[in-house]
Length: 75
Image (cartoon, rainbow, N blue to C red; front, side, top):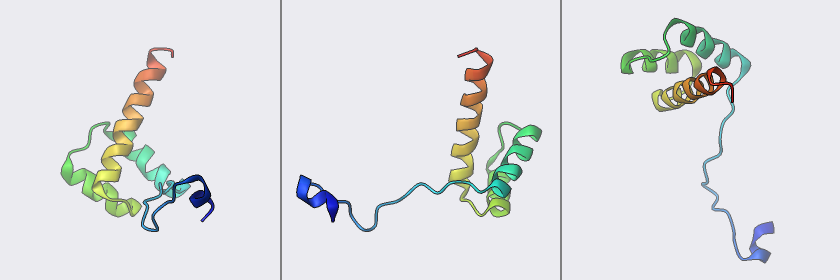
């Protein structure tokens, strides 16, 4: 691998970030407009609609709330 000459290499099983598709984003945004803090049952439901894990949905909502909070503060 390219990195080996510099003394590091990446394992083959490294997890890569998967970007949300426009369709998934539309579902997430619509659900966020309804409720900014979904409970576990709703996270599972949203995850099934978007082909994401409930944990990924939870993180997306956390990041979205933080982004909105920063925009509201004018930063």
